[in-house]
Length: 173
Image 1 (tube, helix red, strand yellow):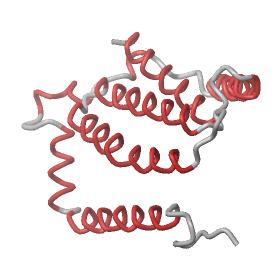
Image 2 (spheres, one colour; image 1 turned 135 degrees about the horizontal axis):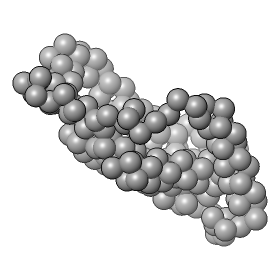
Image 3 (cartoon, rainbow, N blue to C red; image 1 turned 180 degrees about the horizontal axis):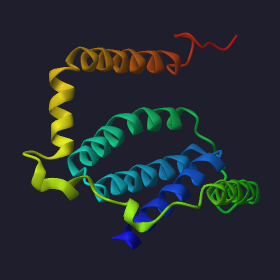
């Protein structure tokens, strides 16, 4: 289990480095998919499979649709790939920064600290992630409705800003 979690965390860091160092939206979308998958794998390893599934479906279903629409509008004829010289330089720089930051906090991390949420399942009547979902819908229902409304409003704002031509907010003068 430790090796699988280490693989998920390494993939998460490499995906974040690919997103941060790449100026092309196409390869950044690939990095975001890798980051979403690896982050959900980490959540599954810690005992939250339902939360992981919901996060993965919402993220890939909602956020990447808007990202793909924006990437289609900002189409480049020759995008820079992951192997181009400036992108590799940024990746090396970010990885050195990650290594320096991890060396500063390296002491105190052990295998026994990776305890899943279901380790004490015999003392509970339901799973931890399902209880959190029930609490979100019962006490956080108003905030859930407000969040859905804000996301819908954000989608309309993004679509209005990127509509182009002579109509819309951004016009060529």
